[in-house]
Amino acid sequence: MREANSFDVFLLLILAIIWGSSFFNIKIASLSYEPITLALVRVIFAIVPLLILCKIKNIKIKAFSSDWRSYALIGLCNISIPFVLIALGTSKINSYLAAMLMSTTPLSGTILAHFFTKDEKINFFKAIGVLTGFSGIVFLFLDKIVINESNYIYALITILGSTFYSIGGLLTLKIKDKGNENVTTSTTLWSIIFLLPFSLIIEQPWNSSPTFGSTISLLYLGTVATGLAWLVRFRILTVNGLVFQTQVAYLIPIFGVFFGYFLMKEVITIRVLISLAIIILGIYIVKKNNKGLV
Image 1 (cartoon, rainbow, N blue to C red):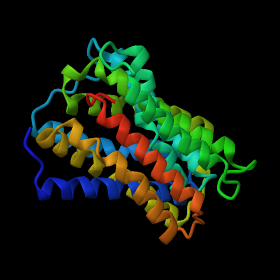
Image 2: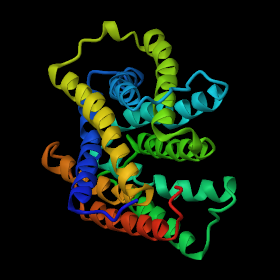
Image 3: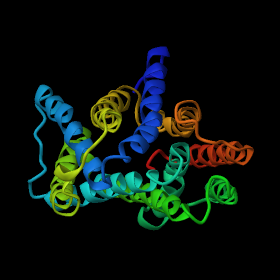
């Protein structure tokens, strides 16, 4: 892995902007599309560039090999469930709030890694980071303008989606030797298999009457925020490694707040900005003391 140059930093910034912008687009898309259908369309669009990438690099896709149970479980926990939960949660809370709550993934990942890995135990500084980060979340929940009786459940649903990302990440560690492109493509295929019947049976998307704006946002989520973003992530991982790529976690909630305020005209209070700073500080402390696994 090489030292990051200005172009690598630019790509990391682009990735942060794309992922940070996904939350207000989820908000817009959810006005017309149900959460399972929204998640399904995202992964359908994402699988196309992944299949093309594997074809170009002559990578064998092992989704239905003897390890299919691992790929299926990761597809369920790392893609299907969190995509649905995030769509459901974001539909009822501010988009920037969803970005901030989703940024807790490294914090919940650190806690889970302590119990389910051998070499990522919580030490004093990690504990300080986790407590700092979650204190920012608690502080945020005290802001009744942003989180109240009408939407606190959806805020918790969003945090649950973040936690499933952490679970999926830990499961992925067990098959990390299977190749990044193969694992991502195989698990995405399985996520489609899980989401498709539920979308057709429960939500019956053919009965919906989506607006043009919601459809554009959904197409953006599938082609750019999922498909293109994963390709950019692959490039960063290949050239600069996992530790550099995880720095995007600091930027996503910042861009989420930026887009929510300027594009969605969402109300941002002083408490929100203080919470954002506390959460980012907690993430920084945790990541500084991690080995790059979560």
